[in-house]
Image (cartoon, rainbow, N blue to C red):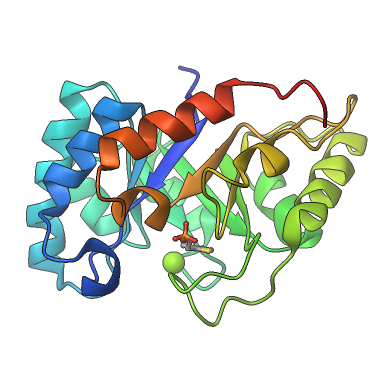
Length: 225
Ligand code: TZP
Ligand code: MG
């Protein structure tokens, strides 16, 4: 089944971004606003609580027919019957995760540069999360900030190698820059399939409206760019 990666929501449970809101309610509003994939990313909670929230997010995403992925934790993904996982370069290796979760699981991998992208794509990743595009307080200590040009360079090189894999960009993306990042590639380079955001939706006062706004920007190919 083809996945719509266009507006990919990554969650955050910290006070700085989520505030005192209930994560599951925020995710449901975001999905109602047009989010097409949800990744449950929670760097603070213990396994039992990851599973508890993961199950709530599974119920919401199932109701709205949106894929649910779990950041880092293959075991949690299995426990909550998620559609897959997202793995960074320091997480479980792709081949091991694929053996555990099976051929139908969605397994995404973070790529910061071309060689990480090529290794993941040829190793059977389902999609790539490319970034960090812009510096962001949401994730400090990111390896390097590659900017829209860095994203485009990876996309261009993948295209020239005939490697077709869905891609989303991540890092500091919001309504004022998504179009610039999303629509910069010129044919025949295959452009991004979507953008991944945390704070632009999770920290928004109205997550549903924020998601709706982003979705509209992503759908619209700007006339002059
Ligand atoms: N990986 C690279 S940047 C980032 C992750 C998880 C956080 C992006 O957060 P935001 O708030 O969309 O800039
Ligand atoms: Mg990770």
